[in-house]
Image (cartoon, rainbow, N blue to C red):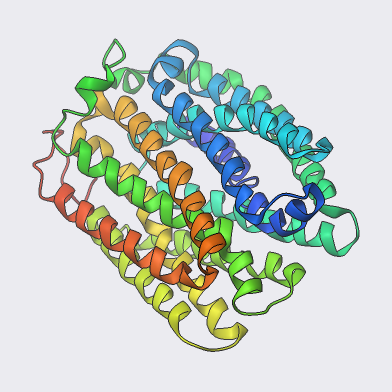
Length: 395
């Protein structure tokens, strides 16, 4: 049954990635159409992130009540409706309203699916499944760039992705019997019978460290996603239509990196993969510091993507090892909330820096976040695991 569900989970991860890169790719056109400052992209991203934080914190209760399959289908459907609403918006504040269900739909499915895979699949499957997120996230800016160059505008780009999400929702609804058959299996009962209160979760050894690590990772990733196109246009003088497509280099890196990481995890354990990713990310950020043309900028984005590739899936996959299977759903929900706190606060923070100083400070901003992430992950690995019986290599 687990193998029959794999293709469905692959599709669900693609659906998670498709919308994530659209705002950054389209914002230069959108802010002109709405007549708002460029930094207002941060408002949209904050609303989406706030919704994901709220739903992530409730993921333990919601998943126990409805099951992973139902949560996934409902959440992808909410995202599809929200994207359709984005395409029909004619004012910035209407866009803000549609961002609310968009964020609520993203949080629960992210936490629920990640916990399911962490409990039931090996580390290479986690990397390959997150590679599918990269497939969706890579396709997003290219589809948006196509819509912009063909004259369909950013509305057409959002409408295109909404139609794809609707089709994916239909597939997920048809797959619900597979999830329900799996629901009664013994391995589904590894979580505690009741939802763990937040105050108890944060007291678990290593909880604060992993929460800060996730905060930093998503702060870095989402800042790149949201501001890479603007950075290339404002600092590197690349036309906005071209920059929307060039931003896809980050997603090419993260997608290819996760495909390769799946094989590397057969030899290296999760902590080693995370350290390798942090090293490559640092090299990519340093490439952005160097003066040069488009080629060097694209190489930097590619390296950052390659570096980000193993970090997220390997931290997620090691959660049962660090905190125990009985706490993994609750802990992953809190990790997702922490990740989206990074998304909520840090990209808008850089928007203010770009408005009041210079967009050229993007590499400095990213380097500071990376340094914090390295320190927090090192502190996490120094904590004793939760006695799961797993070795570090198995985790």
